[in-house]
Amino acid sequence: MSRPTKRPHADHTAVAHALRQQPGVWLPVGDYNSRVSADNIAYRIRTGYPLGNTDGSTPYQPAGAYETRTELTEDGTRVHARYTGGAA
Image (tube, rainbow, N blue to C red; front, side):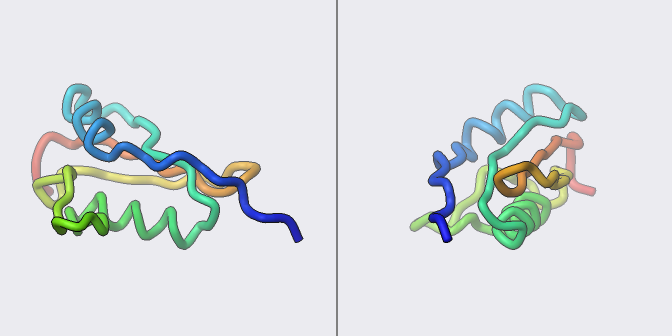
């Protein structure tokens, strides 16, 4: 069995900023080796839950202001998000 492909870390601050600049537009957040990891990140984006940073913060605020979807790829799962313009 081969090792999973190492992927670059998503720059969530840059992604959140880009999403806020283009409300309603779906943009890729990042690619994840497992569906579980992708679903976890998608949940954290939608709910504004901390991403695991040492300071416990998230750039995806306010909670409910982002929507997410996942897409299976050849090598894993891709997360897409869009900014809805405010809390749901």
